[in-house]
Length: 356
Ligand SMILES: *Cc1c(COP(=O)(O)O)cnc(C)c1O
Image (tube, rainbow, N blue to C red; front, side):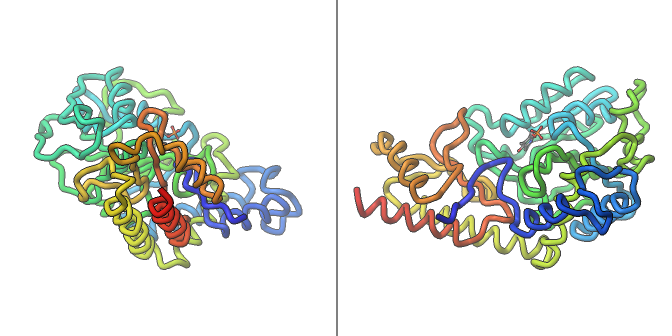
């Protein structure tokens, strides 16, 4: 049976990425060797890194004064690397969920941290608005997509201090005005590649301003200077990421991704709003994520939650269980998820309503 992959991360990748990765594992770039067993400094692999960086720049329209680096350690290591490299005295954080809270917590090891606003009072079910960012902050950190609770900041806004964004779960899902950010980072395992790869987009002039010494591996400048080859980078995930980037380009780029993502999200949110058995967890439609669509059984029907999950999995729909801290359901609708998977879920929700 065809499976519909709604997992939040690691998550669905384009079939093209999987097929090309399999080919690369069998034989890589005419080397007679597998991608798994070649030197990261071979000219064939250096070409993979170069092409990946070039496609990052092309697809996201990244200005020339920015660098793109590929690292290990996950987005979680960036929670440390960002303040290590940027926080001299004070940093500002917007707390919109678990990942934002984790980032904020790490920054406290390095200096004063101001939580400018938090949506914790309502289980992170909205994006705070109308907050003030202190003008003497070294940077302001946001998490554009709240993977666990299902909210998303969809606008690139102006900020008087350098803006840093964790875009782990919505990178390449829409066009981004990179010039409004000092740093954009993320784990690749949501919308780009298998687990093990972290990307960082850095405006070059933001570095070199903190007073503390920075250990070599944790210093962004090291990785910029050595073009992501200071140490062995995650070779296979970078190779897979390149395939996804090629796929995004042939699909029409990030503008085409956004169009499809809007269509998928509308289809599912409309059904959640309409169907009497379900209700959304994010009340304000403007704050709803296009990548992680969270919903629960409507009031009075909570005892049917397990039934619906069982029926969904019997119909090949995997990964719909909400995060353990939220419960309910979460349908992750990343770039690679086809509209037909969302349609299948919507059809099942309608059928569930008819049968109960
Ligand atoms: C998954 C996720 C993380 C954690 O990523 P790791 O690579 O596992 O460290 C951080 N931020 C966001 C927004 C995420 O979705």
